[in-house]
Image 1 (cartoon, rainbow, N blue to C red):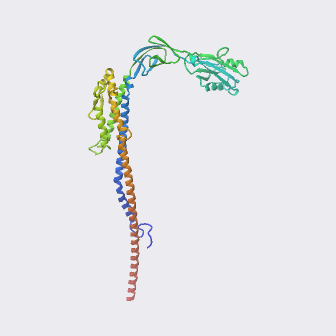
Image 2 (image 1 turned 45 degrees about the horizontal axis):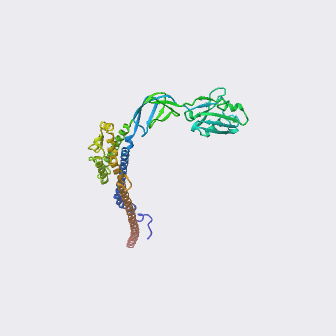
Image 3 (image 1 turned 90 degrees about the vertical axis):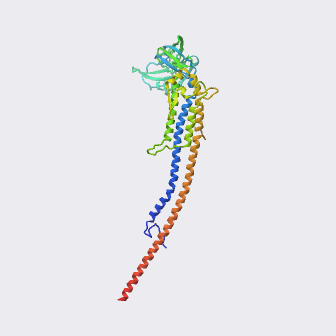
Length: 464
């Protein structure tokens, strides 16, 4: 029997269409597996959102668990002559600051040159800069090809020794002037002398590029030290950034004049940290509510509705937040102005918190950050959150379990797909046999019909 290259050719039946329908029906067995995988993947994504919210809450907890927060100081400046910043070494107090002079950096300038790119002649430039510990001598060899103003400028700047050279065009007949400026303010950073000796013995050029002695370079800006008084005590500084005039405080001198610097405990930073703690918790609660929501009208449910792991996480955090804190005078969140609402969120009473900050700061510190002998609220919270978020912790274990389930479903799906492929191949083989059988039967039927028609014709002819 001749082979059939395409199903249905021999029989005239739509065997390909039937095979496609059977294949689609067989593959319906994969639908529950796919749906289960999608469900697990959705849960992994949901736990990722929960982890992100928990991490943000953990960051807010860590801020309140840092004892330096409660010891931090801030500065409040009245007046426009200074700004101030305090470190942990500062002492609370009020300081009257009177700035009488700002520190300045020195500037020197040559007389004018006709061009900035004309070679002046090779030579050696020696610069004595600074005094005391800052004193140094720079020796700069200038080659003929580098003896233009631009070349001399670049050679000085290449030393990177606290002096910056520039070229200024003053618009005069010989407009180009080489300007040397100290990078730092104060008299200790000033240029003392500049000596240029040309190889050709050009004394006019030597004088023009020298300062001090017979040099004609002029001081356009004199180096000056800053001068100020703090509570009547005279202070001199090489810089406008003054450290040590007030213990643990850096003063930035801006202008001459009087200012008052008040160093006090940084209540704003502490208040912001507590507010951040409440906000991060409420954001976390909002995430939990979203993941466990249920709409009775539509039947839509959150991905983790009824999930035991999420319930466990929520229960553990609620237990810590409502439990007694045995570290200091405050026992509960309500003592510091934080109350838990029926929907699980926290509400902050700013007046009560401000009173605790101003009048019971140590008790507030003990409540949140703990003491040498007892854990504070944030100590316990941090331990709980770490157990939830760490590797091999609560969330890591549940997501690892879900990922393993997805892998097992992948394997089951692959086995089922192989089984379906084998079934479809069996159907294809059976249909091919059926197609050939029907084709053969059709050929036999056609042959018999032809034979009967011939026999009938012969009989009819014999009767005549």
